[in-house]
Length: 281
Length: 251
Image 1: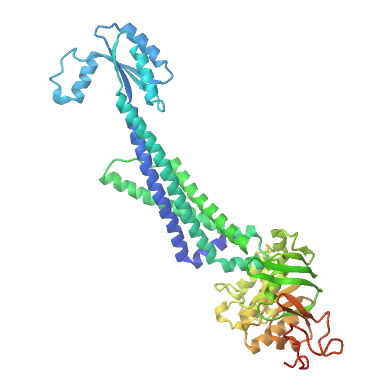
Image 2 (image 1 turned 90 degrees about the horizontal axis):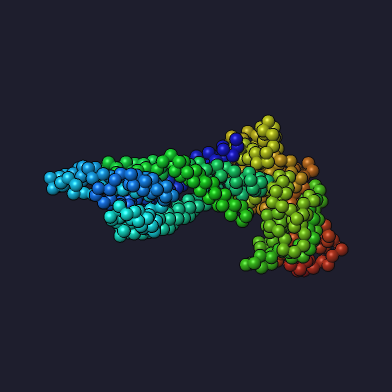
C-alpha cells in the first residue's frame, strides 16, 4: 500500500528524527506508566490493609452455641457483610499463642473470650458502614463488647481518599504532559516533511491521501514507543522487586489498554498536527 | 477556461495585493504575467491554483468557482493543472522518475500506466536518459525540466509557471522557455509569471502586466504603445512600456 510505503520512506529518510520521536513517546509514556505503577501498588497495599478491617463482637463466657449460630445467620444476611466467623475461646487462645509466641506461656485457658468476626464487602468498608454494622452486632445480649479500631478505620479511609484524589490529579497531569510532548514530536515530523506535503497539495492529493501516511507513522511510533515504555517499566519493576520491596505489575488488560492508548495518542496527535498544517496551506 | 471577475485580494497584515482584476484566459493561450516584485503576480497564480480565495470578486478555473469549491474539488482541479516554480520543488531523495511518478501516485491513477506515462513526460522534456538521476546530479535547467515533466504527466489543460526561469542562466532559460512554447504549441495553455522583460518583449504572446496589484497593461485589450492606436508616450505604471518620450520597447 502506497501510504504504508510513504510512512516507511519518511522514517527511513530521517532515522534520527524518527528514533528521537519514538524515544520521546517512550519516555513520556514511561514516566506516566511508572507513576501509574506506583499508584497501582499503593492502591493494592491499601486494599490489603482494608481487607483486614473486621468487626469483632466478644461473646459472654458460657453462651450456648445456638443463639450465637442464629445471630451469625442474621449478621451474614446483612447486605454489607461478606463473611462471618466464630472464634471459640480455644481458637482465640491458639491464635494468640501463635501470633504472640513470646508470650505463649502467659496465656491461660479461658482468659480470652470467644468472638464473632465480621468481614465487610469491598467498597463498603467506610467508617459509617463499619460503625453501623458494629452497632447492630453490639445489640445482641450475649455480646459484651464490640471492637473495630474506630480511629484506624477513619484514618485508613481518609488516606485512601487522599491517595485517590492525588493519584488521579497527578495521573492526569502526567498524561497531559505526555500528550503535549508527543504532539510536539509529531508536529516536528510534519514540519520536516512540509515541502513534500506542499508538493502533494500542488499535484492534487486530497487531504485524506496526505494524512494517511502520517496517521500510519503516528500509529507505528505510538505502538513502538508504548512497547518500549512497557519494557522500561517492566525492568524498573523487576529491579525494585529484587532489591527493595515486593510490588505487583500491571495485568494483561492494563498492558493492552496502555499500548492501545500509545497508539491512539500517536494517531490523534498526527491527525491534529497534519490537520493544522493542511489548513494553513 | 480561466476567468476573473472584479477580483481583489487583501491580506490582514500586508494590505491590498490585488484589486479590480477582470480578464479571461482562453483555452490553449500563452500568457505572460509580468510586473515588478510585489506587483501581485504570485498572488494571482495562487488564486488560479485556488491556494487562496479572493477577498472580493470571483475566480473560475475550468468551471470551478473559487468561492464555492470544496477542498476536494480543489484537489481534483489541481490534477488537471500543471504547476512549476522558480525553486523547482523536487523531492531531493527521489530520482527524476520517482519525482514525476509522485504526481501520478497521488491521483490514484491505475499503476499499470505509470511507467509509460513517466517515460513519455521525461522524453517530452528531453530527459529520457536521466530518469534515474537524483536532483542533485542534475543542472538547474534539467531540474526545472523534471519539474515540467511532473507538471505534464497528468496531461494538464494549463501550466501555471511562477518565475520558472528565475534561477536559470541564459542558456537554460532559453531551453526551458522553448519547452514551454512547444508544450503550448501542442494545445496546453501556459500562464507564465516572469519579470524577464526581454523574454516578454521578444515574444508575440499575450502580456498582462501588473503593478501595485492592478493590471496596467493587457495586450489582448490594448495594442502595444506606438502602434498608432495608443498614445505614443507609453503607459502609466508600466515597466514594459514606461510613460516617457522614448519609443516603446527600447528602454
